Structures are given as structure tokens and as C-alpha cells.
Image 1: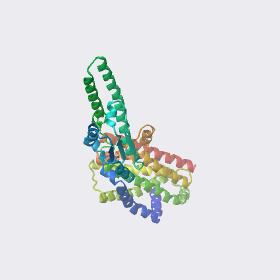
Image 2: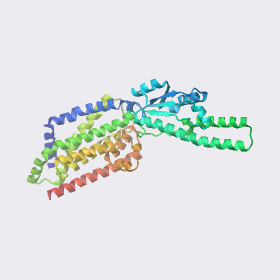
Image 3: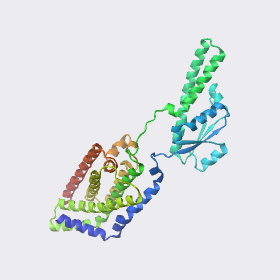
Image 4: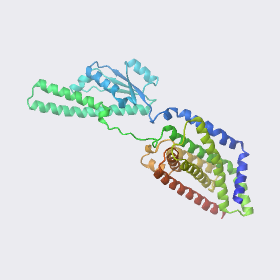
Length: 402
């Protein structure tokens, strides 16, 4: 009973502060609206990289060069990501300056004949500094084609020398060589032939809207927990005095702090769900029962994290800094911003060690995908984290009182 009384005291103190009402009722609608607006392009796409345009400036009036350009423009796989636009140099540079294209591909005069006779005339790729990732992707694509053409030329030269040694006629040798050059060149620039297509589900098999809705939900709860911890810090000293006066146990104090966090987080979570329901067309496509369980689990785990921080024997400013640092790590390294497939090496280990990753995984696989294998493992990890945080909080609390 004393734990509930302490929780009520903290809640009353919180709701006397105007900031509490802003956090609870204004922030969810504002931040969700801002995220939906800011991520509009990503949410409408199934890819993290939106399609982009590349200008082709062809200074080589040759049938084979025109055929290569046409091959670029007709490739369905390339067309899904890159739109090639043929134009003159002046217009291309103007569009690049206006940031309307990602790169310019300039084909020099004599390019096709140069390939035939081994006099390589390099194409020029002008990149757009305002679109570094798209430019780098196209440049890498051109570099790989150039490397393959160079390797192919060595093969053609070998065939040429062999036919000469076997005393074939000059006309036959040139005919075979020209055909081989043409075949290798078209092969080099045909991305559909060069690569096998493998589709990777970047967003755990759900749409970007669903993925980032879960991310926003977790982020807002983490932010609410941080602000709640900050607002209750002013009452901690008074409560500690009452604990010593009335002999309230460490466990009761620990439970009261957790109950305060869970109550505020539950109210915030309900408002976030209402906001998403109003601003989007999302609906539960997984399992309702598991969705409710993971919803409650998310609130308890985040409450346990901030309960642990609240009991650390450090200054309030340092405590808030650690909470803010944790929020940044959870967002950037815990699958809230980037999908799990984007983390490699040590970043993968950091990702797997964050509670936000396991919260995100469990919520996605209960609300939108009913995958009990993934769900059970995620809930198991979250249960272990909750137990470890609460046990550590209790130990720290006992040490502080001793």
C-alpha cells in the first residue's frame, strides 16, 4: 500500500507541472505529424533509395554507341531505379546545377571505334555533390562496366592472335574480332545479364510506413520516459526523507518509481496509437492477443530502464545526460532509423544489445506479422532485460540506503 501511495504522490507532483500536459497531449500528435511529413518519400516507397535521373551526352555519332544507350534505356531493372535522359552538354550541366539529375555520362567522340582498335577513350562521369549516394552508385556501376570491358579486350586480343597464327583470312579475323568486341561490350553494359537479382526485405517484410510507425511509437515512449524521469527528480529528495521517516522498504520505493513510469507511458502509448489511427490507415494484420502483450511489454521494459537510471547515485544532470545518450543510441543503433539488415560487423552487435531492437522486432512480428518463433525469442530477451534492470535497480537502491 505504501508503494501505491508513493506512486500517487509522484503522479500528483507531475501533473502539477504544465510540461506534463504538453508531453502527454500535444507531443504525440505533433511529432507523428512531423515524422509522417518528413519521411513522406520513404514511406511511399519500398526502397531506401528513391529513383533518380542520369543525363547522357553522346558526342559519338556511331550506330553501336546509340545501341548501347538504347540498351540502358530499355533495361527494366535499371529503369526501376535510374531514368536515362539523352541531351546536349549545356542542358545536362544546367540540370546538374539545379539538382534535377544525379550524374552526367559523357560519351566522347570516337568511343565505339576506340574499343574496336584498342584505343580506349574514357567516358566521363560528372557527379552531383548534392546527391552523393546516388552519384556513387552510378559511378560504381560505370567503373564495373569499364573493368569488364578491359578484361574482355584481353580476351579479344587473344582470339585475334590465335586466328592470325592459324592463317585465317584477314576479313574473317576482323569479322570475328568485331563481333566479339560488340558482344563483350553489350554484355558489359547489360546489368540484367551481369548480376543475379536478389530481393532483400529491408523493412522485415513490412512496408516502410508500418516499420517507421513502430519506430516512432518506441521513440516517443523513450522520450516520454526520459522527460518523466526528469520531472520526478524534484520529488526524489522529499520522498527519500519520507522513506526514512516511515521505514518504507527499498522494494516498495522501486515499485513506486516503476508504477509512476508505467502509468505515464501507458497514457502516452494510448495517445500515440490514437494519433496513428487518425493520421494513417494502419491496422493490425498480425495477432491481436500478441499485439496487446508486446504493447504492455514495451511499456514495462522502458519503465524499467528509466527506473534503473533514476536509482543511480549520480547528479541529476549526469542522469539526464545518460538518459539522452541512451535515447540516441537506441534510435541510431537499435533499428529505429535503419533496418536490421543495414548493420554489419560491430554495429550488428550493438544493434542486438539494445532494448529498442528487440522491442521493434517483437512489435512488428505481433502487430503486422504473426511470427511466433521470432516473437518468442524477442519476448524472452526483453523479459531478461527487464529482470536485469529491476534487479540492478534494487541492488543500487540498497547500496544507497546502507
